[in-house]
Image (cartoon, rainbow, N blue to C red; front, side, top):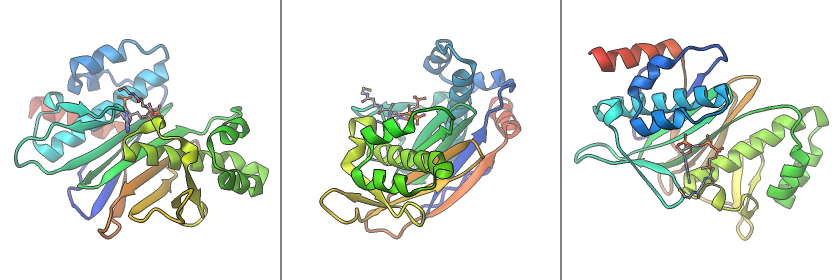
Amino acid sequence: MDIDNDSTCVSVYWVSVPETADMDYLKAVLSKEERDRLGRFRFRCDHDSYLAAHAVQRLLLSELTGQAPETLEFTYNEFGKPELVERPGSPAVRFNLTHTKGMAAMAVAIGFDIGIDVEWMQDGINFQDLSDRHFTRAENDYLECVPSRQRKTAFYRLWTLKEAYVKAVGQGLNCALDSFNLLDIDTVPRLADSRKETMPGWHVESIVPSDYHCIALAIYHGLNARPLICVHAIALRDLARRSDETRYG
Ligand SMILES: CC(C)(COP(=O)(O)OP(=O)(O)OC[C@H]1O[C@@H](n2cnc3c(N)ncnc32)[C@H](O)[C@@H]1OP(=O)(O)O)[C@@H](O)C(=O)NCCC(=O)NCCS
C-alpha cells in the first residue's frame, strides 16, 4: 500500500469489506474514542466499515506524516469535518473519509480541498422521493430522461457527487443539496449554482469500484491545473500487514 504524496494528484483509496471479514486486529491502530464508538454500532456492517475506514485513515496519514497511527490528532470545523493537527514542517495534507455497507474509501491530497462519498446502491429505496426533495429541477429532468433500468445507478451517481461536493466545502448536509446543479452527468459532470453557469475551480468525478457501490470525489483546485486522480484498491491483507509493521516495526 504505497501512498502518493505528490501535490499534482489526488489519491483515492477504497477497500471492500466483506460480511465475514475478521478485522479485530485493526482496532490496535484506532484511538480510544474510535474504539468506544465501534462498541456503540448496532449493525455488524456499520461496525466493520467504520473500523476499516478509520484504520485506513490512520495508516495512510501515518505514512504521509511519519507519525504513529494511534497518535494522530484531529481538529473539526463547526460542521464536523476533520483535519489533521499539523506538526511544524509536515505537508498540508487534506483528506476525507466515507464508509457504507461493504466498503470504505478515503481521498488524500496535498493542498486541495476534497470531499468523497460512497454509497451502497441498495434496491428498494424510494429514490424518486429523495430526488424530488433534494435535487434541482434540472437534475430531476435529467433523471426522468434516463431509461428506467438505469435510473437507480444514475440516482446514486448524482447523490454521491452532490454529497462529495458538500463534504469538500466542509458543510456536509448543512449545505442544501438543491442549492447547486450537477450538469452533463454522463460526460464530465459540471457543477453550477443557480445564478452562474459553472463553478470554476471545481472538479467532480464518479468512480465505480463494484456493481454495488458508487464513489464520488469533489476537488477544489482553484486557479491551479486540475490534478490527476489516482485510484487504488486496498486489500484487507495489506491493511493487516501495514498495521503489523506499525506495531512491530
Ligand atoms: C458529513 C455528512 C455529509 C456525512 O454523511 P454520510 O454519508 O452519513 O457519511 P460518510 O460515510 O460519507 O462520511 C462520514 C465521514 O465524513 C467526515 N465528515 C464529518 N463531517 C463532515 C463535514 N461536515 N464535511 C466533510 N466531511 C465530514 C468524517 O470523517 C466522517 O467519518 P465518521 O462519521 O466515521 O467520523 C453528514 O454526516 C453531515 O452533514 N454532517 C454534518 C453534521 C453537523 O453539522 N454537525 C455539526 C456539529 S459537529
